[in-house]
Structure formats: structure tokens, C-alpha cells
Amino acid sequence: MSNVGLQAEATAASGREEGWNRPRTLTPEGELLEVAMGPHHPSTHGVFRMDVALDGERVIRLKPVFGYLHRNHEKLAEGMAYLASMPFTDRLDYICSLTNNWAYALAVEKLVGQEVPERAQYLRVILAELTRIVNHASSVGFLIQEMGASGTPLMYAFREREKILDLFESLTGARMMCNYMRFGGCRVDASAAWLDATRKVVAGLPRFADEFENLLCTNEILMARCQGIGILRPELAVNAGVTGPLLRASGVNYDIRKVDRYGIYDRFRFRVPLGDHWDVYDRFMVRLLELRESIGILEQALKEIPAGPIMDAKAKLRGFRPKAGEAYGRIEAPKGELGFYLISDGGPNPYRYRVRPPSLINLTILEDMCLGEHLADVVLIFGSVDIVLGEVDR
Amino acid sequence: MLGEGLLKGLAETARNFAGSFVSEERLTTVQYPEERVAPIENTRDFPFLVYDGDDWHAGMRCVACQICEKECPPKCIYIEKSKDKKPDFTGKPQIYPARFDIDISVCMSCQICVEVCPFEAIKMDTEFELSTTDRFGGLLLDKKQLSRSNEHYHKIHPTEAAEVDARLAEEKAKAEAKAKAAAAAKAAAPVAAPAKPAAEAGKPAAAPKPEGPAASPQKAAENKPESPAKAEQGGASGS
Image (tube, rainbow over all chains, first blue to last red; front, side, top):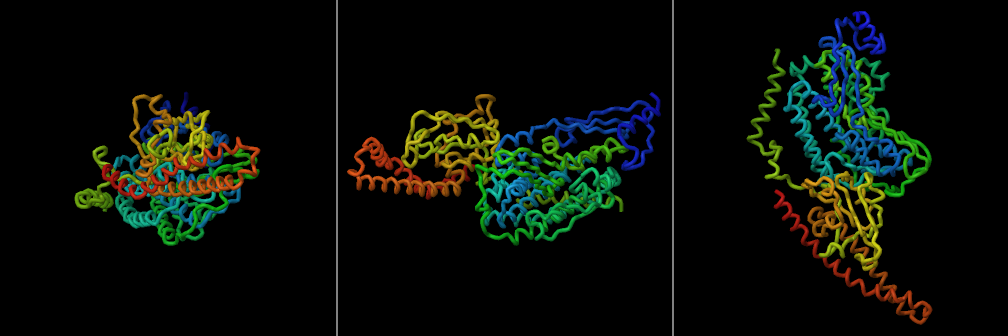
């Protein structure tokens, strides 16, 4: 096969001449090397395979292959009561079970027009922001791990995560599969002791953020590895439907907490960090800055949390039959826009149950970010997308 | 200066390393299984069936209503109703589960069975060392293996158990008052309804029954003062 033929094939595979992240100056010589990274490559965040075609060290093609962890979540949910899907949502993005709970509860509350009491709203915000801290700290830790810093930064992140997971455990009963939120409120009330313990943990978090930033932000190796790779242009990001820190690192100001102001997010003051180089380092920095903003929201919420009921008096646990209709509830999950789309036909089960997973949709631009990069950087770019395979495959 | 960031990061790791010798709270790990962290009260893992008193079968609160079986998301509960009846905690004859199996290899510890149970019969345990060499039968628990006493429940979830006991005592008092009122009404009008002696025959039998349950509120009252001490014991043995 001639060089020209190969080039044409490579272009055809990527499917577009324009809209590339960077101009292509490569001329592959000889045969392409096809490498199947995964499904058990240690860098992949779960069972995920990347079929990479390489010219030397450069990536010419990349095909994400997923579905190894498919659990039939959506179809299962159509066969069971509304409440019974709640524990399954924990298992979508298993690092952030509480935000998944919230998104699903929000969709069902929209469907039936259910109010949520004040205290429950505050508890939801507190738990969601704690979850965001857990997610961002560990995702940065994993990213650094993929760079070769095995252990130290990740363990620092996990040390803080442990404190937060202990809080989750003492409130909800489980560390990761919390299954805490209910339609119209939350399952159990937080005691004064729990709130005090949370205040104590939150008070220690700025120190952790400082420590993390000192440890990583100006590290020359990290900067050399991260800066200027995996560039995602804002136009492409918007067109591909990318959300979350990945989109904001591309400089697009879009945070559903600000756009939708779901729950009670209109009461809190926080900023939305944006990137202006659109590379891996920006994604890393955006996550660290969001972590700091989350600490700010937590401080405000813990100060203002009122007393009162945590479940709406009209909320029903069993025998839940919403009127026929449809609803889409979405929240700013740590990884992006997490939405649940429900259609009810008036029965006890949803007629259609659809999850809009941020991980899956953020993954669609993986090839565009990786083309022309080194194979070693692919792992890093993949890490900077921050996905969880439980959510990609559902 | 090149390398400044690296040195800054190294200083941070050095501070953590040295700090772990000085400050106790920096030591975040424990040497399981020799050491264990203190149990957290709300922890849950797998369900168990609560019984009152000493006999697990007689005191079982479950009335085989099968609500948990229906609501269980992964469908890991299997219940068969009994043909005969046994008195429940208020003395009312109730069906009991002839068979109650939970496959804990399927159970996902979501606690929905606990939430939907109207009889406070199923609760979450905190026992987590459940590994077994028998992968089929070993994780399929029958009702005997699932039964735990109310004292055990008080030991693992003291606050919650005290609330449950109070609720049950209230319910029982209500049931007793009702039974008493029914008995009084019957005594007041024995002549008025001579046409149905067969139906009345059941009621006098039900009225004396409260003595069986009468034992259980005492038990509940005993449990309450005991439970803090037990919790302490549990904590001491745990640590």
C-alpha cells in the first residue's frame, strides 16, 4: 500500500478534513501499528478499550470500545418501581453516588411536581458538594497517577476522601452506595453531631487544597507533560455536547448550577473557573479551582442550614404512580451534565427511563483530542476527560 | 528557577512524612484485622430478621406480607407464607414466613426492604466478614440464619432501635386498649348478640393473649437502660 493510500485511509477514518484540533502534518510511512489498549490496561479507569493506530509514536486513529460493563440499567428501570431504581443510580458513577441520586430524584420530582423542604435542599447541596470534592480530588490524583507519580498525590486525595466517606457513612449508612435521596426529600435527617463533624472536615479542606496545589501545580514535570497536549477547541466541545469541567477548561462558561439554578443554588456565591489554553493542564487546574469553590459553597450551606422536616408531607414512598407525562431533570454532576429523562404512562414503572451520562458524551471527543499526540499522552488525555465506566456503559 | 516547583512539592511530602511521626491524626490507616476502626452507628450491609424474646421462631416479627420481596430492587428475597398462624407481638394471630431466604450474593444493601417494612421486622446488620468457601449455598441465607435478636439490634443501632421499640410499644398499647374496649363491649352486650356465639368464641381467646406480648414491653423497657452499656461493650470489643 502506498503512502498516499494510507494517508487517505487515515483521513477517511477520522471522517473530517476540517475541525481537527490541530493541523495534521504527519505523513505516515510504512504500515500503521494497531494497538488495543485495554480492556485491562492499568491506566484505563475500568474496563475500556482504545483501539489505537500508531505511526511511530503518533496516534493516527483511535477508536474507543466500550460496553464491557453494560448492566442494562435503563431497561431494568423500566421494569421496576420508581423507588427501586434509586439504588441502581448509585452504581452509575460509583464515585459520586449522591449526585446521581439527586439527578434522579430531581427528574421524578419534576414529573410529579413534588416540593422539597428547605432542610433537605441544604442537605442535598452539602452532600453534592462533598461529592464534588471527592470526585475532583481523586480524579486529579488518578491523572497524576497516570503520569507516573504512583501513589503520593492519589493517597493525599484519598486521605481527604476517606474523611468525607466517613461522613457519608455516618449519615447514609454506606460509604459509596449511599442511596440517600428520596422523591420529596432525603431519607434520614442529619444530626447536630453530624453537621459539626462536617464543619470540622470542611474546615480542614482548604489546607488540603493548599497542600495539593503546592505539591502539584508548579511541578515542572507535570507542566511539561500536561501543557499543550489534548487540546479541545471550544467550538468542537460545544458541538459535541461536552459538559462539566472538560467544557469549562475549554473556556466555555456553562455550569448548570448557574444556568438552571436547580435546588437552591441561586442562594450561594461561587465562581466558575474557566480555562484559556484548552489543554490537559487547564482541566487539571479547573478541577482544583472548582474544588475550592465547592469548599466555599459548603461553608455557606453549613452556616445557613435551617431546622425543619427533611421529607415533604405529601411525598409517598410506596404506591408511587405519577400522572402520564414526561420530565427531564439535570444537574451539574462532578463530571458534567447528568440528566434523567422519564416518561410516565401513569403506571407504577416509568414507560421510558433514559440517562444522559456525562462520562459517555465527554468520551466522544477522545479521538479528536488524541490525534497526532504521542501514545504516552493518550493515557493522560483519557485521564483528563475523567470518566467512570459504570456510567459510560450503564 | 527550574526545579522550584519540584522542591516545593517535595517539601510538602517531607512535611507529611515527618508529621506522621508527630501527629496522631496524620496516621490514617489501621492494621486490620488486628486493629479495627470504631464502628459507625448508621452503617448497613445486609438485612436480618428481628425477633423479640429468646425463641427466634416464636418471636419473629415478620408476618410474610411480602412487601419487601416485591419492592426489593435486585429481587434477592424469597418468601413463602405459612399455612398456620402464630401470635405476633400484639397477640394477634398472624401468618409467619414458612420460608424466608435472602441471597446476599445478590443483595445490594440498599435498605429499601427496611424502609418499606410496616412491621419493623427487617433491619440492616453491620456484620461484614461474611466470606465463605461455599459459593452457592453459603451466601443463600434462610430465615434461621437471618434471625437476630432485638438485643443484637440494640447493640448495633442503639438510637434507631430505641425509636423502633417506642413505636412498637405505642402500637401495642393501642392494640391492647382496643382489645380491652372490645372485651368491655362484649361483656356489656352479651345478651344483645346471642345469634353469633361462634364469632364471639374467638374473641375471649384473643383477649387473654396479651399476656404473651405483655412480656415484651417489659423487655423493651429493660433493653433501653441496658443498651448504652452494651454499645460500650461492643465498642470496646471492636477496638
